[in-house]
Amino acid sequence: MMPSENFIPPQHYSMQLLKYIQSQGLGSRKQCSRLIENGYIAINGQTADNPKSEIDPATVLTLTVDDEPITVVPMPYFYILLNKPADYETSHKPQHYPSIFSLFPDHMRQIDMQAVGRLDADTTGVILITNDGQFNHRVTSPKHKIPKLYRVTLKHPADDSLCHILKNGVLLHDDEETVYAAEAVLENPITLLMTITEGKYHQVKRMIAAVGNRVEQLHRERFDTWDTHGLKPGEWTFIQPA
Image (tube, rainbow, N blue to C red; front, top):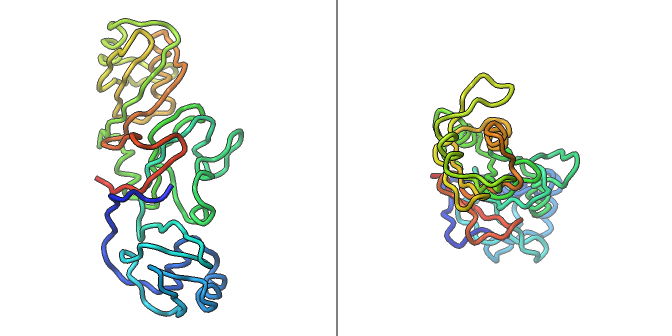
């Protein structure tokens, strides 16, 4: 999926064309130099054939390689919102299912990028991906209490007492710490909307298990202010950090 039309370009700065083309995941230094010198690279419709020329990444609207359009990855940092489909692993080295990173174009898979937190293979919905380590740390740190909203399909019908228990705190199995739902509302007897501000391993599933129920399906509807509205499963878009 190509970047959103509402994407705001990064700050202006200058870098060498060769380094920029490498940063887009288009090959080694030698390979990128050959692409440029042989006239295969065009930026904003104009051939760019001098590897040492300077370029402002924020001004790059289109990039083609041998007349084939390439998704332009913002530099120096990029932020991606992916609507994760089921049966994909949040890993560069998946074991049982394809990696979420296989959903991106070939050249982007050569760029260093990390998921912000993890979702289980069977969990769907919002997941963020970035190359900005400070942003990753900030939004995953428990002290910042970033809200994450989940739609939980329960195995057994429940009533409002379930929400009351979750908001008042449950002790996870094999854990000595009580965790709380920031919000919990039943949409119907088997559909729970629950917000958490922590990110413990399998936290939602473990919280539901701790109150004697079971998660049948799990979908993350929102991560902070970001949601999947307008994105089909497997689709993604560039976003700006809050």
